[in-house]
Length: 121
Image (cartoon, rainbow, N blue to C red; front, side, top):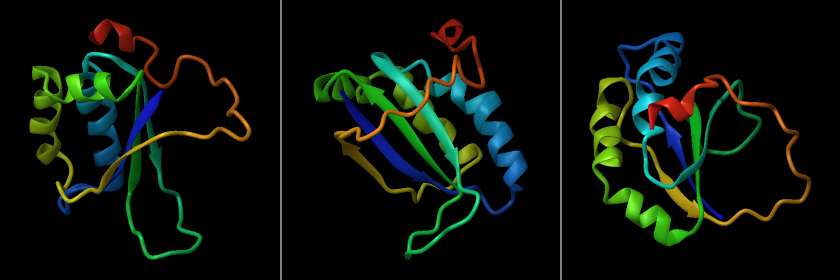
């Protein structure tokens, strides 16, 4: 598996609550339609401990392999997700394709905030 991970910044005219509400209620259903998407996590930054990078959130999306990621990136569904981003977020985020090396697996947390995400597909 590979993962796309990136930073996310709210628009200046959005509060943090409005930003995350829009992301969860409007953008996530659009973004979750990406073909081949195996997982989708948004991590809200509560506070920074150290370092230079500032961000409101990190987004993580898992794909089976780089080919699946590339195919998704060329799809109408991902184009629609990118078209929606300026409606709630700045477009200045930084994104990476990474390979995880799991040291201690995270606990199973169940179906997530939106348990009906498969209905979006």
